[in-house]
Image (cartoon, rainbow, N blue to C red):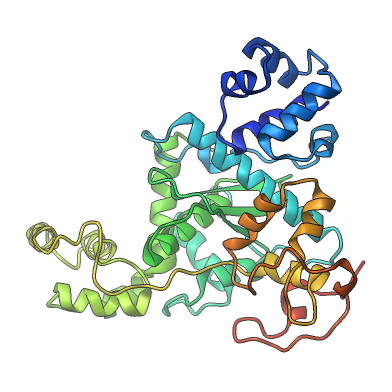
Length: 378
């Protein structure tokens, strides 16, 4: 048995070693030794572990092929994030990426076009990233998540809702950039998280400096990425009011509060004007929920991969077949895809309807299917 797999399954389910030990009638020390590969459990014990976690027995005998480091979780400010929640987030993201990796092996993927820029000013790095994304230097970035996917970033939207956590990012094998979101965040907050994590991917593939410095650089980066200085000096014209900021929020997809801070950072408003705007925000009780709703952007690339490889003629995906082939619970695979734009989950499609070659209509966000995936079977 692969002890690492037991740890992953246990943490995905949110279980402690003591909890799973009690459930299957062994000691916590025995579970610890199994996870460290110091004790080989009996077949009966493995069966009990499988029943308690909901993972198939085959899962526990596979090698952990994908190395999935902590990435920006090492330096994001998560003072209130419980270690149990952190473990569940990273392991669930690992499972989702394992599904992506399995699908990607069957397809010829587009190359990664997201730049890695070491020892560069964050503002310049953000400007270069805009160019890589195909966005003009002074225009809002529409469909940021979609554009990141087209640059080769794997975007994972977990079904987990954790108030103390928004997102993290990493490079898998130093080759594939990944951004992971947790669920339940507003559209403008998600876009800022996406930009912040892109900053880590671009600037911090190798960590240099303190955690505070790294986070500050990512903040400078996302400000320029989403609200470039050149455009903001035109857009944030006097008088800067909550009404004018609400109009800008709708156009630029960033929060009113972020726009206040950007105006202050660029010295467009004074300290007193900033205090006055924040006083109004507090009086309106906008700190947690602002007016002007920004649509929550969802990724779609992995869903399209699944539709191509495991979809029927209506685009419904046989998630049970995927689950079988990657040795994961069907419920977990369904949860993985629930965060993507796509057709309704259908886990009961017969295997004989899978069509691996078919033409599909172009859609509004991708010029063609080939544009996203280079959809040719290796």
